[in-house]
Image 1 (spheres, rainbow, N blue to C red):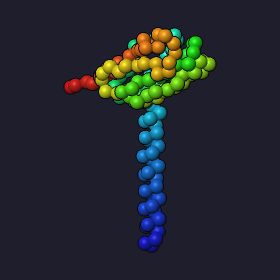
Image 2: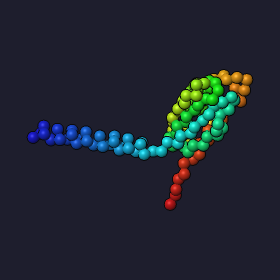
Image 3: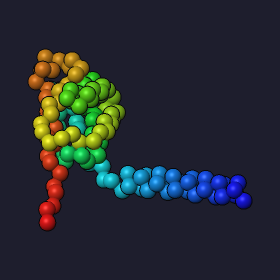
Image 4: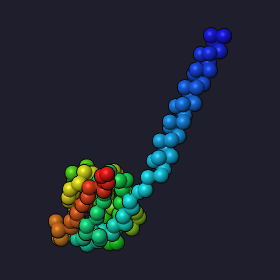
Length: 130
């Protein structure tokens, strides 16, 4: 009888763990991802300002129209190479605390390379008070 109780207890524990894991996956799947399409071309990013909400899931899809570029947000430790082929490079992250974050090209792309900058603006999440 004791063995039967332990077996039932373990099964109950496994069921509980499975239910918790499934609810976390469902919650993650329900979260909306803020996707932004970005075009890198000679000495600029379009859009030049990207606005996100602190704490939200963000997906930046970066493509080049002319040559190889870099896409770097140093404060967030993001730095990817964007190929000249036009193939998309996706950067996924959780939006940082409210503030302004500089974006720069991290691959030398010509004489105007140093001017190839943009900005990520993270705004506070809207909260309601009662």
